[in-house]
Length: 182
Length: 181
Image 1 (cartoon, rainbow over the protein chains, first blue to last red):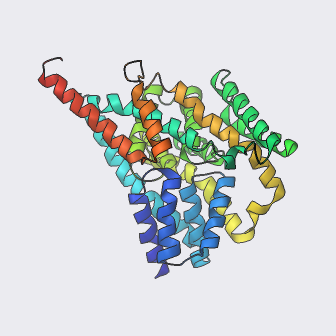
Image 2 (cartoon, rainbow over the protein chains, first blue to last red):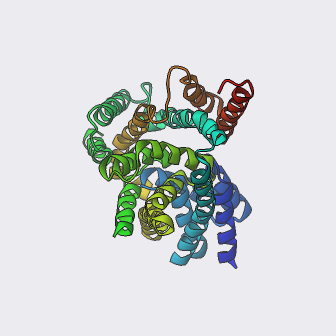
């Protein structure tokens, strides 16, 4: 029974969750903490913290974690994750086939002419939203962390944008720098 | 063979994406456009636009469209599996064994270094993809206004997608009616 509920809940989150991981979080919280009480609010906060520290999309991380905690089994994890991803397959394949069929249509061209620049704005906003005290430290709380963060930001930006240095290598180097500096 | 390559490439991408879907953008761009040459930068921008117009997880949406472009449905499944697998395995291990993972001092130190780097890696494609998205002096206001509305006024990205797409459609309609094109 819980497996059916788990499937329906995460399918719903995948189908109606717009606006990326953090926007999806409030929806996940409403369903799994408030509605079904599969995990406590404290556990939910733990998942968010873990998701910020581990790789992968935050939605997948939550589904995997909650699936396991709610059922105590690996199958719960697999089912919740599958249910979350399934709507993406349906929606994206329909959208993509529609796009391929009609991308020479003048109306579709007009739509994409303004949509493409807006998408660049969306990425810019993601970077701006993440420039917070949680990610950079703040000059009032800890001078050195703030300074180091700005330095890491500048070096990584230039290394990637100007010198085209591999993004994964830069993440590993930044992690190493963090381990040494703090 | 191509399916295995797709799975492997997206597995690597999933493994090193910390900080959500947007952090994946530079890594996917680098792997698929620059290194493998599987899709062009223009196609990549279209994939991004489609992925952001839909619900669901951005990273998964991008992998489904890219996989589908390269090897149809089996490609989409391989790419999505690759994206999901690393976080699935890591979180499963954490859920089973280390519930107090985030309080680990060493982990916290490493992540203090990684977080600003991730933000820089999200900022870089803004400038790199601008050209493929055909941003010029005449439409520069679109990304600027979109970014400011989301950042400062908490606009949901879905509204930006709807308004930007709908606006372009209407603008084209009016231009055609006036006989400009």
